[in-house]
Image (cartoon, rainbow, N blue to C red; front, side):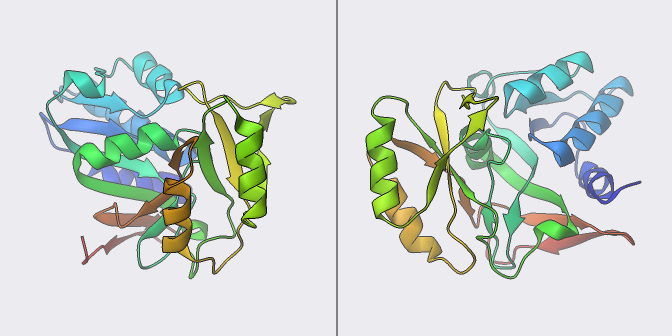
Length: 224
């Protein structure tokens, strides 16, 4: 069993019958979705909200009951992967391009768990590029602003064409480097016209589960 699967299976222990569950996106969340499919097969009554079209497809193939955020009145638990996170629970997400829907689902959830292998837990975030979802209209002007701010923006491509999110937007990856000013960067991005959402997920999770060669370790966010 690999590190990601260990973390996912540990997180599945928090799933209870009759829950409304937010299903994350990415390689670690994949193992969690497989386990949810098993639980549904065993008779668990779950309502699940997917954070991306790719997760929706995987879940549908496993006969997991799926709902949109507008079809449920709450979400009990969201379980998702993460690209980088520090011990102050500042995280970067969006490597898979689903950051907006992931943040919506997390913000609606009573409890949030991030799952990962131990390479994702870092002392300082920033080595992994920060994804920012932007609208397509006037995007070149926004790229100029981001460049002038020293954010080192790179438009994400897919087979030579601009990558499109499930929402029909572009993604710009900001190469900020470790030790960037997290709160100042968030403030600037939140104020830029054309920015839909950033991949900064700050103090959003209740706990993280870190898979290693030996075990899956639970670290609780005492500030949440």
